[in-house]
Length: 431
Image 1 (cartoon, rainbow, N blue to C red):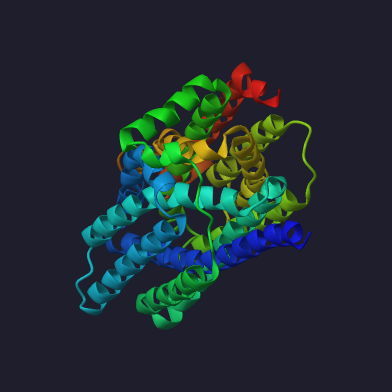
Image 2 (cartoon, rainbow, N blue to C red; image 1 turned 120 degrees about the horizontal axis):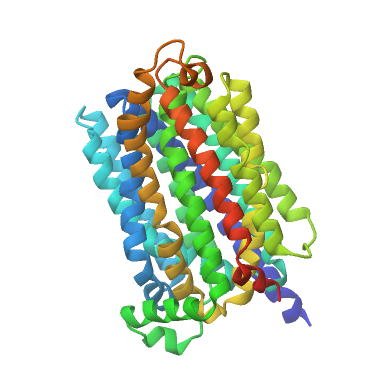
């Protein structure tokens, strides 16, 4: 009887250690990411420059993810997580050394982000599969809410902490904080977390190409999951354009600046924090698909319109709160749908295929967003007279073009949600 009680407790204990320490490490990484976005925009004053940082991170991740399932299934999940975190730490050390030598350039960040993106290729499916191995099935929704909670807490704290440390001690101090949080998470994972091995002989013997093909075949024969992934891919495309345009608008417009960008990110984190608590506490809904569709429609129909039409930080913050509040609830229900319907022995391969199909739109959106801001919408707004309709609605100063772009993607996001809401294959997942 003791074994029956002790086994799930041991698994949950390992998950709690992994979850809490990886959250700490993610906080340090996010502080560095936020500080480097500000640094890069200050160097060039270009939305495309900052957007390319994310393009370099996501492009290798998207291209190689489809092959990562075989490696994720074959290798030790713990070894993958330790190696990936170590490479990220080495990249941070290189940035710190270049900064101290007064030799840090934008292209250095691009190159290091490519390396980090490659490591994330195997880290992400390994982390997802590790959760399935450590957590009882009946705890999936609660654990998904906890993961959303940690992501939200990081989003809430990182901008404020990064801005404070950046102002008081400079970029080097932010990088040192990142390395300290990495060290804590690395030691905890190395000495205190045991991740069970996946008992799938077939997955261990498959070649990389066959594993990738197996993941794609599974999605092809499960049309509801495939269409749901395409739905998320379309949403990611809109969201990545938003992410590319946001720093350009907030760092340029009156009432904006570094503090405004930090406050808006903190509000986003606060909304995610509340939403993650709801995701953990709410009972299982009658229709998870309905929750996914409705929460995404709410997100797409609020924040972008507020950013486009609002002229002050309070309005932008209201939009951010409405846009991100229900995202953890959506993620929790999506997570349950995928983990419950995909056999655990297939999850590494299927999640890798999903990562390629669902996230390939992110670097495209970032790149397109940066180009649209710098080459299309900002020049368009700069040509408008003070009496024009466009100036009256979106303003005349730099950043007005980004506001116009937010209006365009707001409409696009609503149309995407309406279109996929009518997909019968997605609704068939309820059966």
